[in-house]
Length: 326
Image: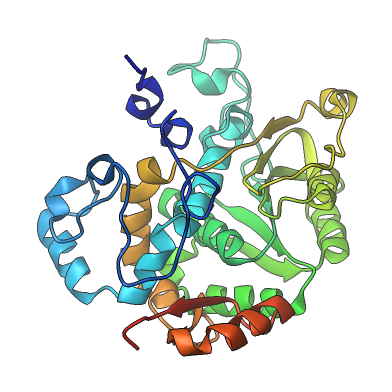
């Protein structure tokens, strides 16, 4: 009998029967309908919100489904879940708990601190400094997820969002401006190039570095930048898909800074309920099409596919939805 412990534990990305659309074992396509293997244990029935867990009350879920933009549902395939996964991995990492709990390591894991070990952390100690490298759709979703979580927890922060392309940086700025005050919390937020980000982090922390770095590119140079930015006893969370080139970091480098390095594919199905709640909350970002702050640039018919692919290769458009009924 196959062992489904990975699925039961929530690590759905490592199910031994998982396959990927567009791969050698499961062809992809663009059509009105697709047949999904093992759909009963894979898909969520959006017409029946009782079929998945949510922090939203049942009536709120029903209302959300009625007013949610259809185009935004594309974000739930793996884009928003992956961004949320990166932010969740970072904020729940053991290395960040002294900042988030106000207790030094390892007392941050104890319900009550032993007497005689009291240490008062400064405001600087309690301010979380994070860098997000890569501002494609997943990187933007990671940043939005991070902002939402920190606002909910009322954690003071400094976040720098980084990308080489000015077009992507401008998109990130527009997204941040579109989020209301409740979704931003209390902190500083900047969008910069890699070199400018290093200078800013150095200024913010007096050369100490970031508590965490989210790497959402999948390139050795991005990991090198992440290592340069992270502080000793910091964490690098990488959700970028890395290929054949060897990693640019050695075990000695990680050891010398006590840096933790997390890799891996997002368990999208497990993340779906949390991602859906965030999608509902942030329709100001995810619900639009073709606006400066929207992640979906256009919705077009198949007859425009050739031109759209050319534009995508040139970087002139981002996410485009093909509507076969258009």
